[in-house]
Image (cartoon, rainbow, N blue to C red; front, side, top):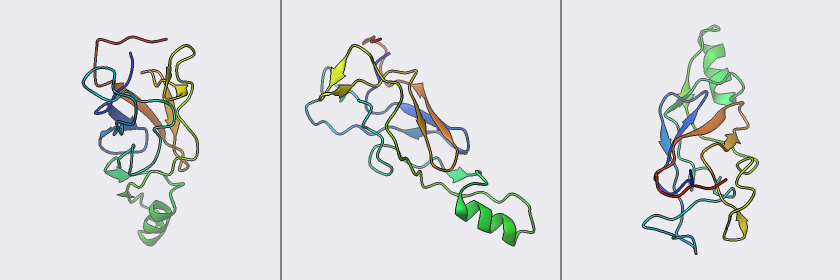
Length: 126
């Protein structure tokens, strides 16, 4: 399925789902803007996932150390160094591969962000 604004996301180290925000810059095909692989900006496209439990996250590591080794989740602030992968091999949106439901996004703190609901169920892409 093609992913659009309002899609539901889930991080493997997050404690709550999040939503994908797609800015409508030349991307409206139906009623919602359609995403491409470059819609990966933290706090612009990818919102926080509640609390983060990744020991690689420096704030979680510091809070865990202060709690004498007891894992202490801290607020999630995604750090995303690369675009969604792999994206569509055949469909381009705003000169970049379209985002499909099977794509993943990697957080610098080790989390794998996946799409659990594409936000629409009528447009299929490969």
